[in-house]
Image 1: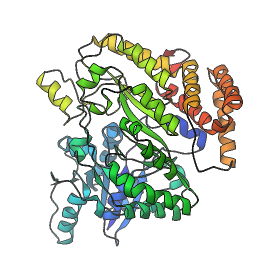
Image 2: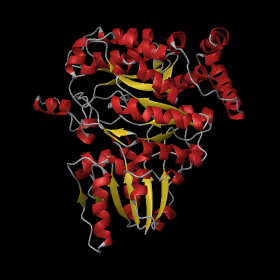
Image 3: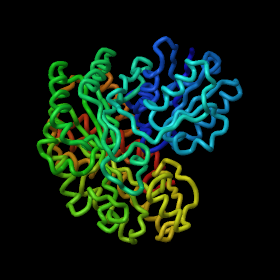
Image 4: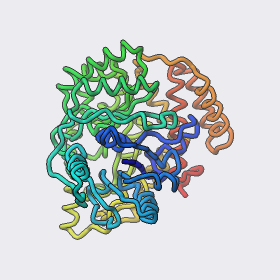
Length: 498
């Protein structure tokens, strides 16, 4: 059996980091972890091929080779999904689909032959059993149960063209103990945090090491510290020992909740294991809006000091922010700007509130007759899928004001300086300067330092870094590249968004 696995293309978004990739000669930020995990669940005798449209083209010959085309996607990839489906239908190839997009919207895709919905550890074996027994597979396989991920195999990392990615991904856990009303994670994966065992994680690290991967590893968990006891008692000590034995070949990035700031021991253990950064959903400094969205973990705390505490512990913080809550007033835009600038959160993803399907927010807005359309899956594309309480034009204008005031060059470089002054770099892994880094720096000089507007601010920042924080030079240049990407995505030229 020949199985072609296709991962659709991401549009140009905040998270694509497409414009940053050109500086490091990579094609995509991360690989399709879901598809290569599904691949590992297929019979070993089957032939498997992966085409990630973010790094390579889908050829007609690829589709012609396949007996089945497997496709997985998120909402934001819908445009590319439609193109893939159209070509598969034209070639009369059977399509098997799964992942978040299809789990929630399978009724929108009548052309697809079979759906493997929810978690593949449960539903994929049912499909495979029907094939093995010579039965005609059903169109929809779904379940309300949650998988035991201690049975999940090591993903088929060997299918990847690893050199084309900036970071490789692994998953430790699924589910989140919190219940933010705009978030679809719990509807897809549940409240209970289910973890792989420590042996599984070490096997995945071994596999990456044997495939000669060195550098960033992104742990994709929605909340890595959802089960702090297991993380502290077992996983982090084992990861630390593994990293020491292998001379620290990786650096880890992940996502956590803000309460990581309350546990200095946990932060220290993460740093010893090789963690350098975390993404945290800050959402808003407005207490009423945190109440609105049931962001209980962020309430009744000094968010600014929590962020600074994490930075001083030695972990970089990137953050998510939202405007458009019902309780937001006209001063929310300046409050967001002030918080972002004062916190030194360099990568601040500010989005307009949207209501994904199967969230409590969606259900409430539906009952209030305020829904307009499905969410696009890209919360930084200036769209909302519901009628906000605030005047829509005022909200959009205020949102653009935030973007202008945090990503134009002068405030952006000022924010990096603030971060570098807060940050206590405690990384154990010390990289040697390689030719690729020198080449990247030359590209930065040419593109950001010479060709682009805002170059004067770049040179001021470069000199400041050399004089004040020379040990953070690599981080500083990385953030300069991020800024170029963010300005390009948001269409910022000079001081305006086009």
